[in-house]
Length: 121
Image 1: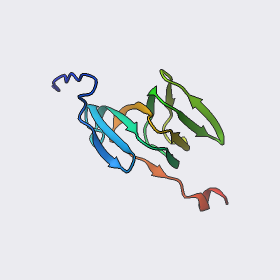
Image 2: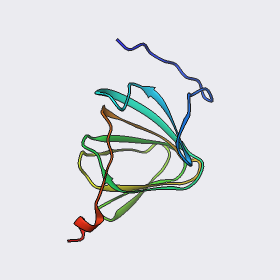
Image 3: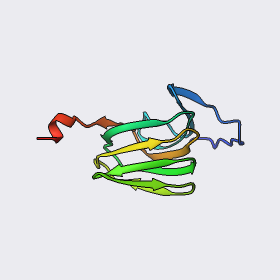
Image 4: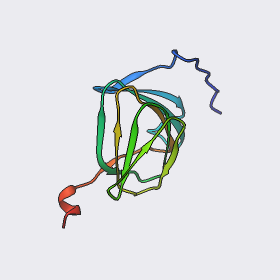
């Protein structure tokens, strides 16, 4: 049984994953089977190109600018917004500087980037 962790604002265990993005693991392990919750924050604009996931992805915007594109339709999501991106749905995302959000789901978490040459045929 997993013990409950309690975090207070400003005390999350942040880890830089790429330039401009830090993650904090709140529950579970996204690399393993089972539920996970991660918090992310950006310190610069980030664009994630067209990709998909084998399992549903639950996104909650905590603050900052965030947009999601599915089927070439872009949606701006504000603080408090929640969206479920179904498994295998191709999408891209954009995060402004200062965006924070949470991603949760059932692991293992995987991102498969679209081969744009194949999509254009």
